[in-house]
Amino acid sequence: SELVNNITQEVLNLMNEVGETVYNEDKHQGNLRHLYIREGFNTNEIMVCFVLNGDKLKNHKHVVQTLTTKYPQIKSVVINVNKRKTNAVLGYKNFNIYNANFINESLEEFNFRILPNAFFQVNTHQTEKMYNKILDYANLNDTQTVLDAYCGVGSITMYLARHAKHVVGIEIVPQAIKSANENKKANNIENVTFICNDIKDEIEKY
Image (cartoon, rainbow, N blue to C red):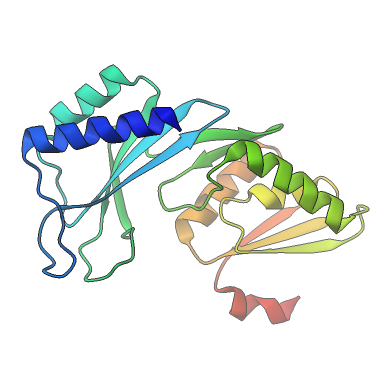
């Protein structure tokens, strides 16, 4: 979106201003590996995540103050630590340097808390159309038990739960399952079970 593009440019300007180093994958040197921005289209909340080859962002207080003053939509600024010699974008460790470590987004009547490592569809408006099309194809009648493989934070799971007897969501990322269970509770969904495991270890049980 235009907002995300503007924030991206502001971050680039700030990185040049404070003299932050940029990561070189071949040499495994430099600090800033990626800039990762999440936007809640329906809540107008923004998360800015700095993926670092270290634990600290240079002059982070100035960076955060400048960003959040200019863009009050930013509700979360997070550092993700990825010191591994890999081209995978995200590491496993996160800590927030401004406000919460999540943003909120809504899909129709459902509200979701989204953490940095948890998968969530990028285009919320298109997601709502896609999920309703999934419901059309599934043709549920309140009697089926449904398996949602790679469920992420449980968004499709909860859509399906409105029309199924029970839905089981499986996801290997612990942070995503943590979000999924929080979202289940926040949305008062009772006919859903979330399991944190590799789908290949669970699929035969169903």
